[in-house]
Image (cartoon, rainbow, N blue to C red; front, side, top):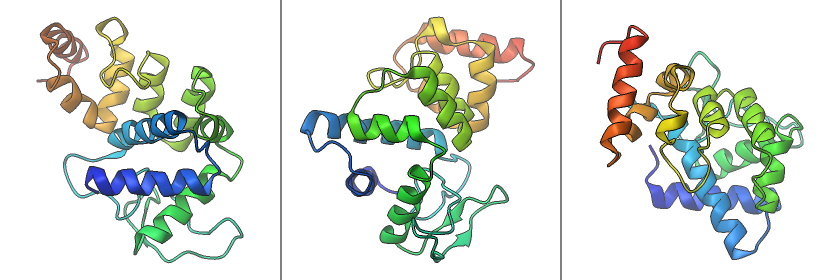
Length: 190
C-alpha cells in the first residue's frame, strides 16, 4: 500500500491531469474523497496493486497507446511500474466517458449528486463504497452512521474488507455492536 503522503501526491497529480478546480478548498476535498475511496480498494489480507491506489484495469493511455503493466489479479487490476504510469492510467480511466459523475465531482468540488457518484463508483467495481455513498458516507464521515449500517451495506462492504477495520477502529461502540449483530444475523461468524 502506498503511504498516505505518496498517495496524496498521486491523487494530486491525477487531479491536475483531469483539470480539477485549483481552488484550495475544492482541491483538498477532492484529495480527501479519493483517499477515502482508496480505502475501499485496499486488501487488508495481502499486498495492493503497485502504483494503482484506485485499482484501475486500464492498459492504454488517453490516446490509446499501450501502458506498461503486469496483472495484479484475475479482475484485471493492473500493477504499474512507476507513479507516472499509474497516474496516466487513472486519468485515462476517469476520462473514458464511463465515470462522468466522478470526473465532474473531482473537477468541480461538488459531490451533491450522490446517486450519480454511487452509480459510477459501483460501475468502477467498488460496490462497498457505492453503498456507503448512498448511506451517507461522503467526506465528513469516514464510518457510515449507525442508522445506515444495513445488512446490504455490511455484506457489500465485507467484499472490500476495509470496512470492518474502520468500524472496529471507531470510538462509537454502539456502531461496533450493531455491525457485529448484523454480521451474525447474516450468518457471518465474528
